[in-house]
Image 1 (tube, rainbow, N blue to C red):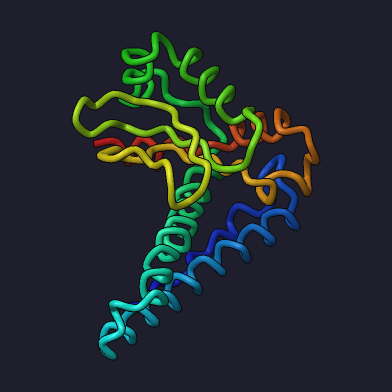
Image 2: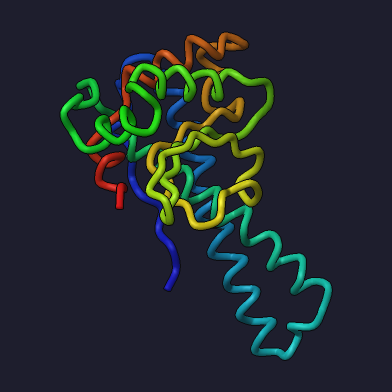
Length: 192
């Protein structure tokens, strides 16, 4: 079964994100979906042709993590955008942030500080599935640094393609626009 790119055109017109930036970002995401399908197809063909022990198979297996996670992280990112309301301070997510971080404001300060760090990658609010604890992580690349046994809740893309067209080097302005547009409903629904 092939993966199909999802349509996020409803985000066009979102405050702080130009149509050009969003359309470019959607095209990049569609490339991850296409490449995930291509890599999976090639791996299947190689397996059927008894070429699983080859260096080419090994490199494609390694590449699969990059393409698949690029696809999935972008889906989470786009799905947690498009909101206009602040977090429900009485909701289970805000209550968990308060319990684990001291307050929503402390959690937000940490998330934004993580997003403001130099480098490219992702900022992800994870829930540790063993302890239930919420932790903000910096993820350098799609296919590395994801904490084992954790569930992604809120995803922010901090690769240049996510903001430079609109904000140049002013990453703090992008972070502010991101926070103005979080759709907290899917974020909270990802909690276990």
